[in-house]
Image (cartoon, rainbow, N blue to C red; front, top):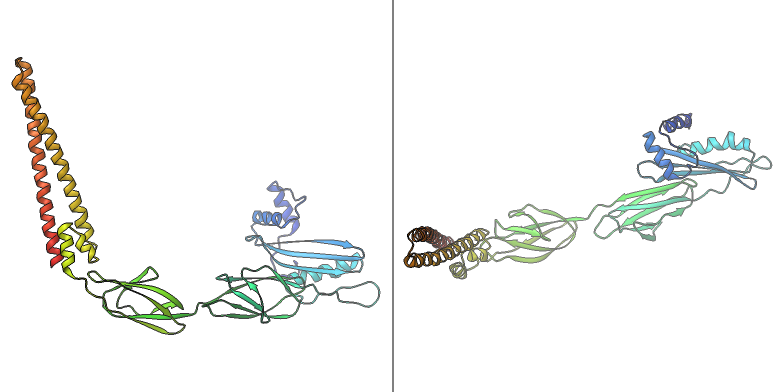
Length: 372
């Protein structure tokens, strides 16, 4: 791998030294998860792992590259031979290294006796992802399922026509081929099939498409993915126009509309009864101000009226006690309390009258606003 120069290699000897410094035990570290953990400590992008084994008279070399960031095996390869350990070391390791580096497309095995035979290629494993998900995948025009889909195998070295289809998106076609034992992850992005929508009607209208406000008319052609959308077009003092519009691929859909004016008479009656309600009936947000201000002034006026009544009751009570008191000191004290309540009563009365007057002024402004 170092001689091939395809990757910048952190050699195992250096890796062991760094692991010792980090107090990390390599013994028993054979899983991809462990390789990822080591890779993160080393600050590398890929980890190369594998094994050499023998079953019967067949030696097998297995290698795989693991992406440290995702933890997924992005490439793998195998090498089988019935030769001796010398063949494994002199031919097998070099062939596997070239294949995992993408430099050797054909796997060759060597035997010690008899003719040289190429082993049966292992199928390649393919996993397909699409954005957005839910696309139907066709392999050589055969429906293989919907994404995200489980991995499936294809013959090694063969060219496979891959097609992804999704309603209201452009189909994607590509050709895929894999080497023996290779793990492939194919990611496809589908572009939406878009059209346009235009509006011809009352200017200054607020347009909402599917509940999302896009602006006030006039609006240039709005690009949308083909489909049917709910429209709501509104303007103060006008009835809201509601309809469904269908946007076709590469086509301009024009919506013709006329907003009808809401009559003033009902609005005037409503604002006369409750300030701000007529404005809200006309779709004017300032009606909220009139409504909130009138309710607030009415509440404050009523509260001051209650305070006035309480102080009046206490004033009359202290005044009666003062008139009936025979002790001079006690009489003076009752008189002071009565005077205090009398002053508080006058203050509450003035405040109440101020709030009532303000409420009347607000009501008048409210009527003038809705009329003119």
